[in-house]
Image 1 (cartoon, rainbow, N blue to C red):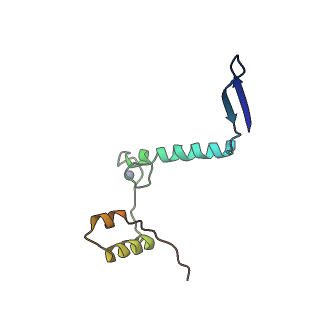
Image 2 (cartoon, rainbow, N blue to C red):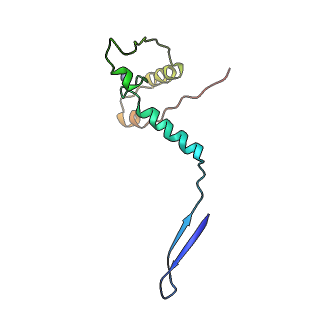
Image 3 (cartoon, helix red, strand yellow):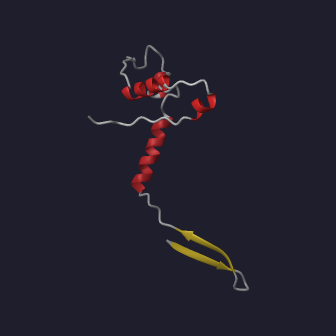
Length: 104
Ligand SMILES: [Zn+2]
């Protein structure tokens, strides 16, 4: 960290500029840029596939197969929310829910 002080003609401090060394390495920056590039190429619908693939012609592009799994954490959350329903919109809208892992 270095600080450069700038004085006016009368010797008064008018500005100080502090420069810190980045805690990010070149590798960190490259990985963040690569992640941003990857995410920018995803379909905006949320399917997790590449936009170029999801919008490709059906006869020349890749085929897709759907499958499903249950997120048990979300199921637990939804069940808890259903069990705590209230007609008070302020209470319902201001609740901060969280799900934590309980190891058996
Ligand atoms: Zn999509």
